[in-house]
Structure formats: C-alpha cells, structure tokens
Image (cartoon, rainbow, N blue to C red; front, side):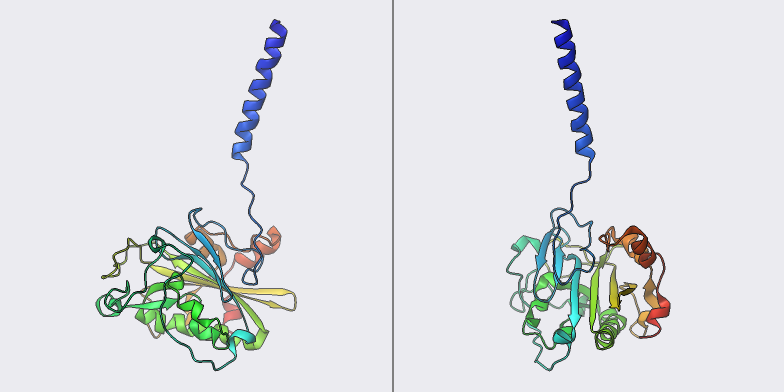
Length: 275
C-alpha cells in the first residue's frame, strides 16, 4: 500500500512539472496568409488588438492607443498605375467598435476637427491614398483605422516623398511590399477635440522590400514627428533591427534565421541612394 501511494505521489509530481513546462512553452503562431505579408506578418502587437485584412492593406488596430500597431500593403502596377478619382472622404471602420478607434463624424464632431489649426496635425495615411489610384477599393484607406495624427511638415514633406519613391519602385521592380507603423517614445499633444482616450505617436517607421529575381532588397526608415518639411528620406534610413527594437515587433519571421539576420542587421543606404 505504501509503495502504491509513493508511485501515485511521484506521478502527481511529474504531472505538475509537465504542467509547469507546458505553461512556459511558446504559444504557436497562427499561419495567416495574405498578399500583403512577405515572409510573415509582424509579431508583437498586443493580444487585444484587432487584425483586419482588406483588399488594399492589412493592419493591427490597437484598442488602447486607437491607432494601428502596424499596416502592411503590397503594391503593383494594378494598384498604382491609373487615373481614377481619389476621394478624401473619411469614414468610421465598420469592423471596429466605437471604443476601439477614432470616429469620423460631421465636421463639428469629428475627432480630427481643427487638429491642423491647433496642433499642426494632418490626417496621415499609413497605407497611402495616392498609391491606389487604379484600385476601386481605394476608399478603404480613408477609414480612420488607417489614419494617424501626423505633423504637417512630416506628412507633406519626407513621408510624402518616401511614398512617391515607393511608387517609383513599383515601376522598377513590378511589386513592392511595405510595412509601416507608429512609435511612442515621447509625449505628444493629443487631438484637441477628440473625446476618445488616445496616444499620439512621436515617430513613424516604414520598411520597404522588393524581390529582385530571388534576392530580397529591403530598407527601413524612422521619422520623428519633428522632421523638417525639406528633409529627404535618405536621411532617415535605419536598420530593420532598430525598428524591431524600438517598436517591439518582429519582422520577416518566416525567413531562415541566417537570411533574416542579413536582411535586418544593417541600414541599406546604398540601395536607397539608387532610388
């Protein structure tokens, strides 16, 4: 009888230990396939964020900050090359609750109302409207889940020039994958007429990647909200590792470790100089 009790006790201890080990094992990552993801979607967003995949982009919507953790989109001539009229009509995201994002309302109640006058913020697209001039789905980028408060000089200056460079890369390479998102490293003034709790980003990052006959070429950029209007994107080139460290996200996770390290370790200014 004592021997049986001892065996039972040992089994209980083993099972408890296995339970502890199991609780420490990494949670499997869901395989989510989309044309917007090149070698995996960014990992590291809060579990409370909403994953949204649309024709023009995919994004992770942060419930607390009210802005995307990241936005991914793939551009080809099918989206870029055209002359369809682009309408800047702002809309609520129909897939999100009112408490999960800012709201587009009539002029007097819109969360961005008069922001450009009082705080010098534009409605900044992370997936840019100008890159979908040939897409009948272009209005998707005007949903507030894709919009961030971006200082006017940045939005209309180096950030806009980088968007133009990306469109030129589409003509050169045929297809370009882009990831973009915010950084929260210092305090910024909030939107003055917004009644939702939110956090305005202090900077933004963007990663641009092409597949050049089987060779990946990628460049990352980090631009502070204080970036001058006249500055050029080349001045903001960074290593992808820097973006990962500062954003808490993990990119290109489906690449073999060796290839991922080579792609992410250094700032690719030489390639950007050819744009």
